[in-house]
Length: 50
Image: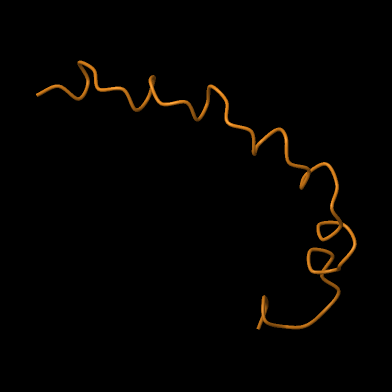
């Protein structure tokens, strides 16, 4: 009734989130960096050692 009711929903309005821009521009979040580099959180250490 609330979320299913069709109405003025800016979230669904094409133009802001649908337009390719800074958020969709590959280079920042898509580029592999130290955050995704295996070695710190994925590296086995004393925390995971039985």
